Image (cartoon, rainbow, N blue to C red; front, side, top):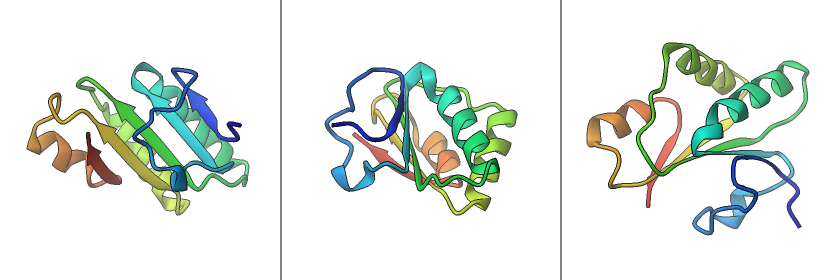
Length: 107
């Protein structure tokens, strides 16, 4: 049974470790990543707990300055951010940029 919040596909990708999936996790898959970040930030501002945000990207993304600021703000709440990315769609510079916000895992 799913007890975490998921934006995007209704099923959880098989490559996400079960240890990261709990009732305090938020998952954003591909096109829904912005909704997951907005939801996480609004929840944290209400002093509700979110432990981790897991963002899954199969293709390239454009991380706008607005969302970079939101990711930085999420980190201030001690919330961990994980990026699961397709290793064929991202180059080293893009991975390095994402790593300033959280752990980057290529699959």
